[in-house]
Image (tube, rainbow, N blue to C red; front, side, top):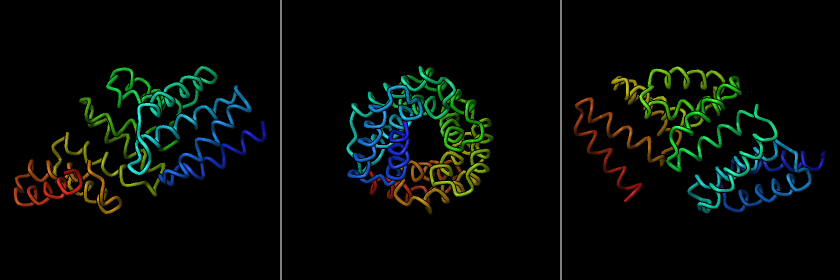
Length: 219
């Protein structure tokens, strides 16, 4: 349906602003798109992604409803087209937040496998692997994501930092976390990464200073 596809394109322009009004507008566009075409697999996938981004944005309203809708829409997309890598990825990302770790990893792996030339599914898998005992794979994956997206956002550097940290490569971890903070100064996870990496490297004064920054961001 041409109108449904036009709504998808308009929603994509809006969804990465992370502003409540534009996020809600993007959701309305995508809800209308899948209403027009109930078999629009890419539309269901994009609607799932938009709900996921709404739930993770500090400036958008965050609720379990977004997670529930993201799961519902990604599963609908995959029922229509199991090859949609981003639908697997967003499903895995929400399941991870829900604590369904084994299923989440399977979905994230499926997403990266289905979309090997798309940076986001690859980077999302890379982000979680260090926490599941696979930091070397995580480092390989995030390097691939950087090659796919040379203008990567700050959280890519954070993902790289956690892989280095898990491999006890503390200098490399600190460099990656510093790059993440440069790009996203208020990213709590990157400041936590710097704190623990400084501590592991024996740089106690810098670890204490960074811990104060963590408390400023999340008192």
